[in-house]
Length: 167
Image 1 (cartoon, helix red, strand yellow):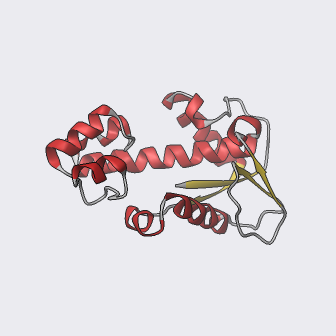
Image 2 (tube, helix red, strand yellow; image 1 turned 135 degrees about the vertical axis):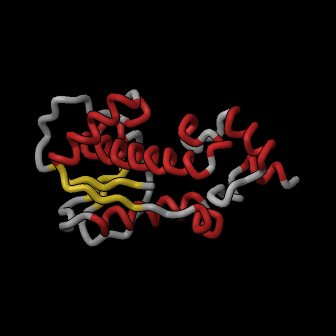
Image 3 (tube, one colour; image 1 turned 180 degrees about the vertical axis):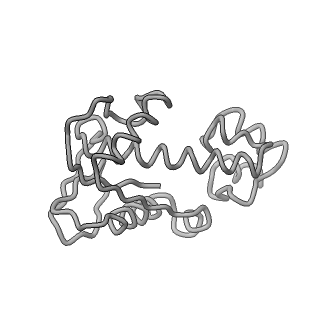
């Protein structure tokens, strides 16, 4: 999951920061305001593709898809970390960019809220895994559900806890 943002405004009433630093309630509020003040693109790569091409390549692909999903092409691309995207416009990589750039922070909020929403829907389909609570992260609850129920159709088989189940 990746987000891409072109900010139309930079004056936000709510806090815009690294999505991991905000509570779910603050992220939801920021998400709604970002949608009003930005052009938003989202890129999603499914679990089967991640297993095929690896998490790094899947992240690059999701970022490319998010850029393509923008309704207008960006003039400049800034990326969190050292991800070298293929783009026709200038590219700048910023380490810990979601704490240093409003655009990167807003994109991280869009991606996180979108992902969490998808995980809540998966929770309805596969309630035994507790996706609504842990959002698919490798928590103790998630690992216990994997041991008890085995992987679901949406799990990544390259996910370490699943690989360890298979020896």
